[in-house]
Image (cartoon, rainbow, N blue to C red; front, top):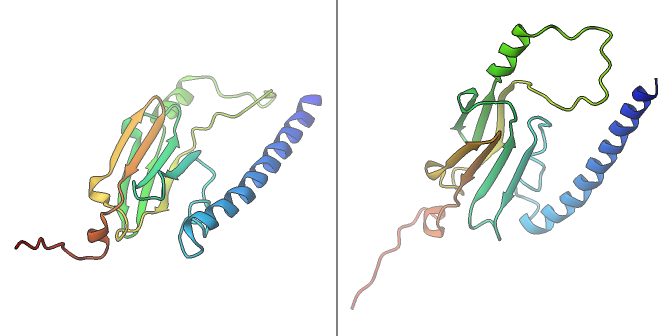
Amino acid sequence: MYGDFNDVFDDISRAARAFQEELSGYARDRQRFGSGDARAAGAYDQYDWPPVNIYTAGNGADGLVFEFGLAGFCEEDVSLSFQGDYMVLSAICRAALKNCDEQEAVRPETRYIKKALRFDAVEKQKYCVPADRYAREKTKAVFKNGLLRVSIPAKEDDEQNGGIKVEISS
């Protein structure tokens, strides 16, 4: 009985911390990126799974980095592509599905003390990566120890403006 109450209070505490972090992060992002940017508008806040860090280095001139926590997943389980102005992530944990078939099913009377591991499928999640601001063809993705790190460099200033710099000689 007490375990159930602890779970409820843990959930409430996590939700309160997440809400507080969201409010403080929103104020910081609006100042840093300006109100018209996708980051400030909450374009990256629509998914709660998998856990993800999204950041830029400095003023964003170094590019955009995504770090997805995919514990239990393998590199072959993950699909990453660009469609329009979005990076699309899909993943299914084949090892977890295989283990579920081989192992005994969880009994109905099972009471978890803590249940935090998730092997849920990730289906076509879209993250805003505007083609006019990021050199998506130079994207690097590394999957190691359950962490998928995707680095997308920013376009050079002359690339963003669509212009070509002409050298003038005398």
